[in-house]
Image 1 (cartoon, rainbow, N blue to C red):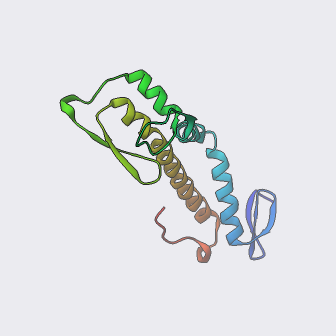
Image 2 (image 1 turned 30 degrees about the vertical axis):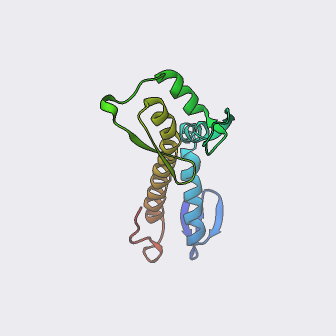
Image 3 (image 1 turned 135 degrees about the vertical axis):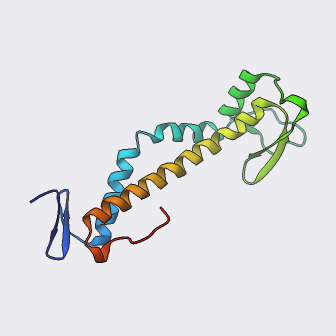
Length: 150
């Protein structure tokens, strides 16, 4: 028996016998996710270092008493560097909070977790596409995914 074949209306996939077409889809999805976990180390790192984990001194009017590792490092690297011409950039931080800044370090530090979340979404979209393509190669025509956004 091969690693992938049809058996009496059900599927056999990598040692799993009597697998329905729904179970086959999720087995392929889990396999694709496992194959991509090595890539997501950078993604997890950028998300984690962008979280407000470090305590900071309380300033009058501040909304948080914590800051992120990314913010501390970016501010240290860029010191007091500012965008040319007095340009102010809107940066998001926290849950739906937006502030403007003209300091490069603050903008970079606040952007880091969003880069990680973007990478995570891209990886999940790639996994979904690979899952659909592999599933459609294995499944019977009536079980195939005809159209999907991924």
